[in-house]
Length: 157
Image 1: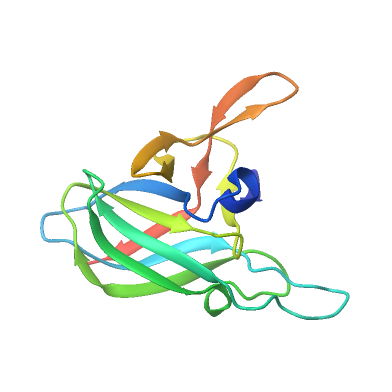
Image 2: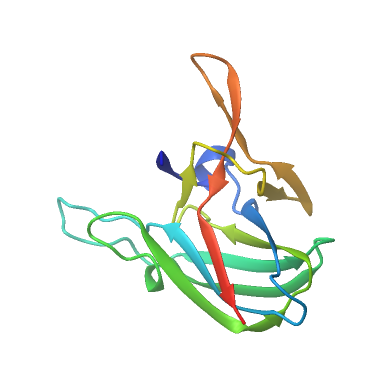
């Protein structure tokens, strides 16, 4: 797996662009309870310090992109590590979802998200201005466009 860190703030210069993944509820009546995101808040090895707290945001949206749940908190509560990226687990109140739904993570430059550059599934997107756009990258040397995967997982019951 070829994984790099991505920040929509760095890439697009905006706090209001999110990394979205489409999921399908495994059964009727299923409730989303946790979201895991591969991310990192950074670590300054010279000074042996972590960055100051800054906000990240998470949204749960239905198949029509209607907002079901919104959450914001400091990135250091989930992504503190001296050694690199880790899966930060965000517990949420049980959110009932049916069929397809989206998890949107706003890194806001505070915790870049893990991006898999191989074997894109087509379920990862950029969420901007209420719209879903395909998440892909262009390889400069070959001008080839490849689909990428945001490393976001969900759990519930």
